[in-house]
Amino acid sequence: MSEPLRPRHENAHDFLDTDSLLDDEERLLRDTVRRFVADRILPDVGDWFDQAVFPHTELAPEIGRLGLLGMHLDGYGCAGSSAMAYGLACMELEAGDSGVRSFVSVQGSLAMFPIWAYGSEEQKQEWLPEMAAGGKIGCFGLTEPDSGSDPASMRTHAKQEPGGDWVLNGTKMWITNGSIADVAVVWARTEDGVRGFVVPTDARGFSAPEIHKKVSLRASVTSELVMDGVRLPHDAVLPGVTSLGGPLSCLSEARFGILFGAVGAARACYESALSYSLERQQFDGPIARFQLTQRKLVDLMIGVQRGTLVAYHLGRRKDRGELSPAQVSFGKKDNVEMALHVARQARGILGANGITTEYPVIRHMNNLESVFTYEGTDEIHTLALGQAITGIPAFR
Image 1 (tube, rainbow, N blue to C red):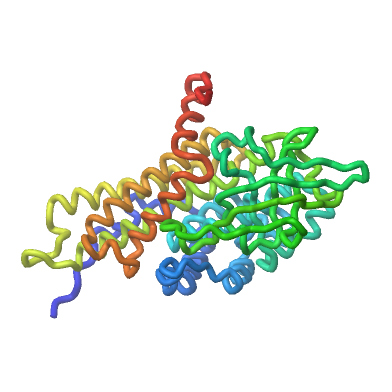
Image 2 (cartoon, rainbow, N blue to C red):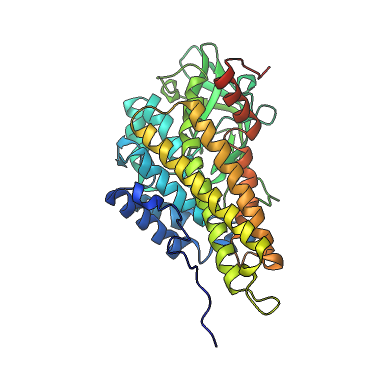
């Protein structure tokens, strides 16, 4: 029996040698997370997707021991890593599954970051060390059933009573980690503006029913949050912010991880399609010899390499303090759009085998449909970029 074909170009998986743009410490971090994904995620994630489960009780502490939860934050048990390192971790995690990257992204950028950036010292000490270790899980409540892309229209509200306690009422929707969270950072209208509240999920009047029947992000927990007269002490509010700038800054942090993560999903699809095309025999030879297949493979490779360069460039800008929200929108929009295209084309190369979870492609393709929409839809990022280059807002 002949040996299976292998890619001829020595850098078929990294054609432009983007690895050379990383330093030794960054490559070590990247390789450590890649091994974790290979050992702990890839063997089982197809089954998790099939069964719609995310084994958080096992994975959260393991991810915490790797130092990946809130890794870009300083102090309170957080690793204090660079933005580039955080992005590389997101890239490798999403090469495993978008649900795993979503868990880490929500924990670090949407739940821990607002406490770290806007919370009191008491709030930071109470929550951040355990969240960094994976002992406590957080979620982020901004999106509502009737207000997704327009958070200014939120209906959730909090009223402060004469004694100082707050009473919180409202509903949030499409909340990653909601049903497994120990704490929710919930954004609500108050007389002083939009404010964030640190809400223990065991508070009376708080519930988080899980959303079922998903065909995307199945290896991830998605929930509704219901606050029905939730009473909170006066110090449950985040003291450092009183505007929509608070939650929007959190979203910018999370989108940064997404623009790296999407490249990981695209890379996994490209590598699966390349390997399959070299092994799959049709008409007395591998399908990789067909001109149409090679056209697709080249298209996928170029997309992944372009997305990698965009991510690395924006990562360096963030570490220098030069990254703007509009540039984050550029990365999120283009890299997710690229990843969806790569996944769909790779699915075609795999033929009928492409629709099973024995291969990663259809799982990534379905997941990326959610990534395309959450943390700002493609349309919203397009309008943000349009405003950036014309100076004219087109949101209304």
